[in-house]
Image (cartoon, rainbow, N blue to C red; front, side, top):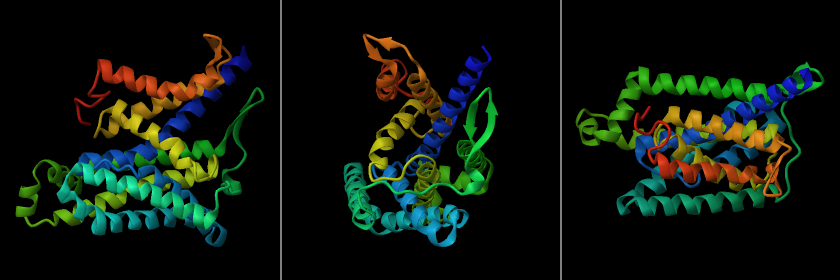
Length: 299
């Protein structure tokens, strides 16, 4: 009984940590869309790029500096892309924006494979984050996943404070609904969009640093999580940061418990059905609540 409870607790914490990693990745996409109206198809590629840059920087400067510098570099790259490419195609409409970001995703994938190869990279988090955080009846919970949870919760709190409780957040939200008024008040609206896009890319790269060190760093990591991120955003409610948070936790726990389950459905192991569950949830959400978990609130 005690061992079963320990396994349940471990599975729950693993699901929450995976869900919070999904939230870290989807938060940047949510912020970009909610404040700019741009659906960034290259978002998961910035996640991948953050992991690879952290691998390169950690070899020379150590993990902690890489954790700081990799998101900043990726954010700068995202800002330059928005300034010199995305801003120019915006006048052609949303389809042109999506095609530009879609092309960028393939460009980044080919660049990563050219520089680092197609195989996975052998790197991990520093010794401080290795090993178990606690052991209960022979069941261990890794420190790395606890660190992911801590960083994700801190990021969520800071984003909420920035967007809801500060003058800068008020300005950013006003720029979405009343852009002409923001410009009339003397604010540089194009610069705001550049900063928002770069900041969203930096958040994806931060998730990439932690996810790449805790799980795996390989070219396929963007394709593996990219579609699920869009599921998180839609299920949570497009543009809702709080909705993305709860949707990410729901999907993370749903997949983790399915993988850990030993049962079968129609003679198929539940673990094999785990990758399908987020998309099934997406279809059900679109059928019964198209606005998402918190889309109607917009929070």
